[in-house]
Structure formats: structure tokens, C-alpha cells
Length: 403
Ligand code: HEM
Image (cartoon, rainbow, N blue to C red):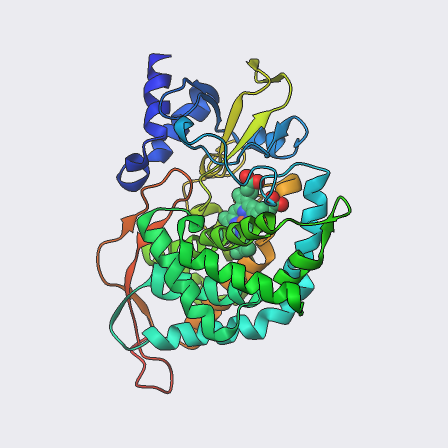
């Protein structure tokens, strides 16, 4: 048990996620202590779940495992998450269902299909800025910019302001602070909200200001928290895009495989999601006593689901530490499961596909251009910076030889 305590302590050390090997810890925990108690310290005490089946079962039981008291570990001194009971991610059924219904239309398969031309154009614009200009940072200059151009459009920001969103989210991301701490962004959202209240149009923000839950309009605070949550959640999309590029740079054979056989695209996207698992954990709070693998979880206990661990569970995935774009089946948990299954899942998949298609069809080789830094975080994982060089676009200049 001393080993367990040692490992669990390292698991919540952001430095281990930036420069260590959290997978070594998770592998040990899956094999030896899959339901592991971490006593309180700077963080409150919590149970760690590391096996696929346990993680999935908790996701699928929102009545016993509530999201309303927060879904991310935060230091005890900060108290409860201020968005608790207000944002989509931090509400339980039945209110969660009503909130989700207000936003679901903007993320449906049909909505994303209608948005494809915009995503493609955004992708071209983003790649055009960096192609042929030498070195760029794929996290900020490609993945981040693309994610913000797309979510900006869905929320209803005028196109001229999409770059502002890129700047604000970059600044928050770099400083490691929440978006709500960014006063300029919040002021901007308040102005936009006021405009939509006066004159609703056809965008997600208008749905939030005109829609009701439990028969009442949402409070302004709720709308703002939900906007912040939506923009913040796209950070996962940014990391999956950048992490996907990194996975291919690390596994050039898999890139050539995709070049040769485009039918692998859907499986490649699922493998990128599994491999990158950019959401590192989800937290739940037990609403009643529960027993998992013989361990008794008391009412009020926090339970932390380590998603990258579930996605490398050797009982579920054959050769889980191999990046294999032909992997099938691939029922990963990167986008969660059950009631809170990622609302942006179809969008995230479309962004990944369109970016890869453009890199394959329209842009020359992407080459590494320097050391990769990983994020110092226990909430999201992936590259913090990914220096790459992208060749000039077809037609702009001679295309370097194919990789
Ligand atoms: C590949 C990229 C993405 C990954 C890995 C990812 C992962 C996740 C996960 C694990 C959850 C469950 C959180 C929990 O309940 O504890 C979630 C929920 C959510 N995601 Fe994503 N996400 C991605 C992209 C996006 C994008 C692009 C959006 C765009 C808005 C988005 C918006 C949301 C929202 C709003 C929720 C809360 C849904 C609910 O509670 O009903 N995500 N996501």
C-alpha cells in the first residue's frame, strides 16, 4: 500500500504529466490497485479508477455518480467549482437533459455536416498562414486557431472577432488560468449576450438566451458559464488535433499507410482520439454508497476516472501501446460515455478529418522543427508546443518531395 500511496501522489503531480511517464503509473495501478484511495493533501481525498470497465460503468451511472459538484480535481482551498449546477458539464439529470437539448442541435451530425464547408475554409485559412513561412507552433497556430474559428462561428461571434477569441484563449492557456479569469473575454461575452437578448438570431448563443430549463429562462450567469465551458471544452479539440499530428510525426509509417489507403480515415480518427486521450480525467461525487471491485465508496466521496488509463487497458485493447490507425474495434473512452458523452464529438471528429485531408491533399510534408513540450496539467494532456515546418501549399510554390 505504501507503493500505492507513492504512485497516487505522483499521479497528481503535473510535472509527471509534463516530463514523466504517467502511463507507467497507470499500468501498475490497473494491475495492482485499480480502485485506489488517495488521501487528502492539497487536493481533497479521492478514489482513482484506472480500468476501462470501471470508468465506463461510473460514466454511465449519473444517479450514483454526480457531476454537479465538479468534474475536475481542484485544490480543497478553492472550494466547490463555481459552475456547479449551472454548466452542461456540471449538472445532473433531469436538468442536464434540458440544458443539453438547448445546445444539441448545434452539434448534431446534420449541423456538423452543414458546417463542413466552413471548417474546410477555416482550415485552409489557418494552413495558408503557416505554409511556406518556415517554422510554426502546431498547437497555437494550427490546432488552436482552427478550433476557435469553428466554435466562434457556432456560438455566433462575427467572423472579424474570431482572432480575438484565439488571442484570449491562447493567453488563458499559456497562463494556465480559467477563461473566466479573462475579464476582456467575459466583457465581450456579456456585450454579445445583451445583443442577442435584444435581437436573437440563428446561433447557439441565441438558443441559450431564448431557451428555458424547468420552464424558466436561463440566468445570465448560467449563460456566461456555459459559453466559457464551451470555449474551454474546445481545448480538448485543440489538443487532439495537435496530438494527432504529433502521433503521425512519431509514427511516419502510419502516415504513409493513411496516404496509401484513405479508407482508413475513420479508424485513424478513432485511434488518434484513443491515443491522445486529451481529457486526462473526469471526476464524479458519489450520491450514495457504492461498491467497486470490493472497495466501499461512501456517499460524498470523489471518484476520479483516468481516461488515458482506460484507453490503454490491456483487457480491452490488443497491444494498447501501439499506435495503429487500422485498429478495430476501438471503443475508446476519450469522449466519455453515457449522459455526459462529449457534445462536441462529431465536431471534433470532423475537424480532425478535414485537417488530415487537407494535409494529405493540399499541403506538402509536415516536418518536426524542434523539441516538443508537454502540458503541465492533470486535467488535459498533450503537446503544449509542437514546432513544425510546413511546406508551401500546392500552387503557391514547388512542393517538396513526398515523404
Ligand atoms: C477530441 C476532442 C475532445 C475530447 C477528447 C473531449 C472529451 C470530453 C469528455 C471526456 C467529456 C466528459 C466530461 C465529463 O463529463 O466529465 C466531454 C464533455 C463535453 N465536451 Fe468534449 N471533448 C472534445 C472536444 C470537444 C469540442 C470540440 C467541444 C465543443 C464545444 C466539446 C464540448 C464538450 C461539452 C460541452 C461537454 C459536456 C457535455 C455534457 O456534460 O453533456 N468537446 N468532452
